[in-house]
Amino acid sequence: MSTSHEGKTHLGHTARKRFGQNFLFDQYVIDQIVTAIGPQKGENLVEIGPGLGALTEPVAELVDSLTVVELDRDLAKRLREHPFIQSKLNVIEQDALKFDFASLASDAKMRIFGNLPYNISTPLMFHLFSFSQHIDDMHFMLQLEVVKRLCASHGDSLYGKLSVMASYYCQATPVVMVPPSAFKPAPKVDSAVVRLVPYDTPPVELHNVESLEQVVGAAFNQRRKTVRNSLKNLISEDTLNALNIDAQRRAQTLSLAEFSSIANYVYEAGSE
Ligand code: SAM
Image 1 (cartoon, rainbow, N blue to C red):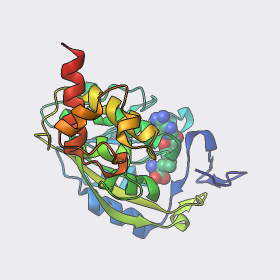
Image 2 (cartoon, protein in one colour; image 1 turned 45 degrees about the vertical axis):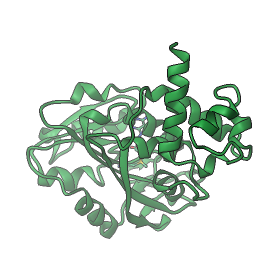
Image 3 (tube, rainbow, N blue to C red; image 1 turned 180 degrees about the horizontal axis):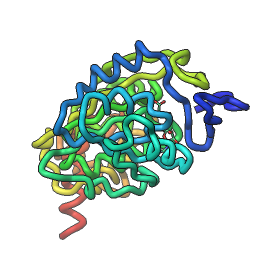
Image 4 (cartoon, rainbow, N blue to C red; image 1 turned 180 degrees about the vertical axis):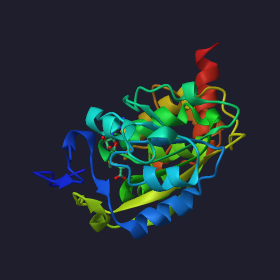
């Protein structure tokens, strides 16, 4: 995200651009987000990127324990030494992109939230989708455009690989709009909080998720081409027709169900 971080200090911490640090300080927005999350005692709550605690503190006030995953060593130390909530926090000083979230799974599925570093938000979404069977729900502050991508349906201009994969794993709904003025330093783009609720049963029957990623990746890598062209190394025009998919269509018009039927064909053909 483009933002001016030069000399921006908040609560005695100089914001680090490389860690995507834009700290929330607007109390009204913070209250809206905590209300949207609705944390309850006994839940398996996990925050990614707690930073200076803008969300951590009000959530910890409502519950007895909370796990936080923070990459910045100074911020992790501050949280371990937090004057009021340190006893409630399980501070994991790690890169969320590499963290094995299954290690936090218990009888209670995880409820994950965070104001995410925008520079890693898309790969982090894909990383988290791979743990969706352990997750009850997720609430994330993201760049508004990424929220729109997550919630887009076929035909929408921002519909792409992230939209298709998200719609396989989760129900996605925007819940809070957030202006740049809610952060220090202020980013140059609008933000929004999205609620992602993983499905217990996926909405389509898929034989292999990697095949779906492969097909959707190939289709959107050449999004202006017809699927006859963009998918020609994976499936023939005749087979597309047999699947009731017009080969002249472009990736943006294909639904999750249509991508899944192509992916199932590609997987079965590959395993013959
Ligand atoms: N939650 C705080 C708030 O709302 O003010 C901070 C949000 S700031 C946008 C993102 C936070 O994620 C920072 O604290 C940053 O250090 C942390 N972070 C950046 N990259 C990370 C990573 N790969 N894994 C875990 N935390 C990361």
